[in-house]
Image (cartoon, rainbow, N blue to C red; front, side, top):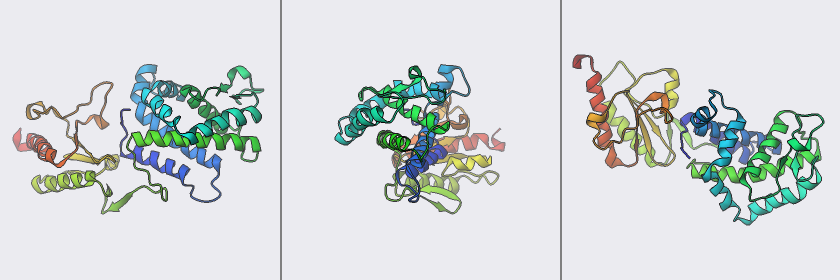
Length: 318
């Protein structure tokens, strides 16, 4: 997995996932929870695979079917699914869905019909006959999503309730493992993200990433007196306001920090070759060069890069 998610997408993914896992009120039923879960997943796979889907399917706007093909072929997801199959509860949920729900409350035994056609045809239905088949798992979930989103699932029908509840239970177990692999921090107590507002900066709590961010922030602000621009931010959310800066700081959940630099060729001052540039197929946010900082020993090196581009871009240096 590429972990291409920026601050905004990570927040959307987590917020909708936590809403699915920890319903905001008692009236929030399995239909509401499944919808929330799919919104989270939708944001996740678009952030994760947009560039790959755009290139593979030659479209600026890849379809969900395009994304599903990539997801079903992803080896890491297959491995996560295989590991889950070793857990008795997950296997029980899958087998109950396969052997009971799909045999009693669907149009075609063992399958979920595509309800967009009227009447539905068995040849268009998605089957779930083998719990070891990852592609069947993903596509049966997607078929339920399609039927629900296109108006053919009702919270007033017992059969639909049984299907949506069963699919939700197996889907959330899988998706939680995927998000854990992505090192997303999910608050299991109340579904709220662990963020607070500090002044006008959005910061993450209790992480090495925050400490690294603060050290870089404080040093930049004390050493570089560029009053015409905002110098740095904790989050790329600020970039939505079209503010320019000397660098942008993005704390990650895995106790690292990504520093986005001004656009320049840093090769002459980057002997360790840690600057990553935006290239076709591996674009960075906004096309800005970036550096990932994992520990305090790397901060001084990054500050030298920031100082170099600052001096280079000063009006009196040209």
